[in-house]
Image 1: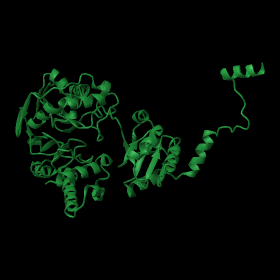
Image 2: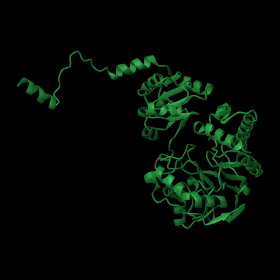
Image 3: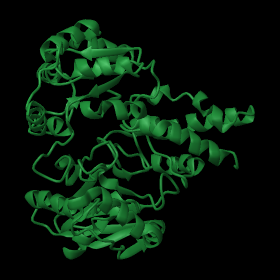
Image 4: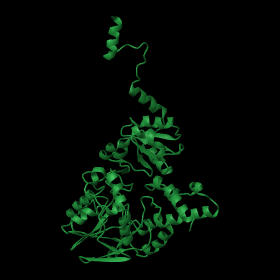
Length: 438
């Protein structure tokens, strides 16, 4: 009978006292032990660390929703979000070298100590915990990177006026994602007394509609033209919305050919990433293509669509406003993020095209990605980067170096740029493979 009772209690989950069982350690006590065992730094020390060692990787271990709703994350040259629960699985992709200095932080210095201890256990040798936490950094007026500057809109950020009649909604400088709704490029528009010219249809139908809602706040004029700066998805796949509004869509012949040949695959990729945000998005080809130059005369403004030569991708064009000395450059020009090299990018031709671009004499440059700037700045981070890379890789090839030695290429002068970690090695590899056969 006693054995039967014991069996019934086991089935019912009745607790049995375990002889000499250890009680679980109090989490707060464990946190204090870990805080005492790791290297902690304060706000001033983090400032000094980033200034002296721009290669430092700064990791926010909060959830993406916290970052979105609570003011963003620390703005640093190599800043990433890896939620605490994913740290062990994703850190090697972000920080492959165990000697790299790494700073972790959260909001209140409760999760980041555990994250620092985890990284040390994984073999990282230069780990620091920012013990003040994000809210102290933010409230001290230190630089903060917002993951979304327009929380109630599909747009990453609302349009700002660049010059008289010229506006641009500056996209995120990171790759397109569900979180930024594909708004990682600049969506610009020119307002005239007879209508609006939009540059870039945007990544998807709903994003195009969001841009139009902002345009309507600025002017009652209809959108007459939509110009695609190239044939990439984030430039072209919002065309279905604009077509419904009666806009005339224009692109370079090479961009049109790319959309004809590969548009369905580009669309499928965007829809996989966009999920519910991709509603209404479909492939719509341009109404008109041009080869070298197309001029739009509208409301007293002369707007020149220029193909200056091969650059970043097929059909890259720039929109030139000669009276204002302003160029909406498209992907010919980069400065806040490292420029990407594609399989079919001709970097030698891009450098030659730059001469014609620079000859415009623009005083204001709105690049394809990043804030409006000047010709000197985009020259430094576009033409000069390409020349530097081709010079170094040319010397490597001339000296009998192989692709396995591509890590010898020094790109440290560009390490502070967004997307450096994602693109630097890939760029070097692609340029090497192209130059092998020049």
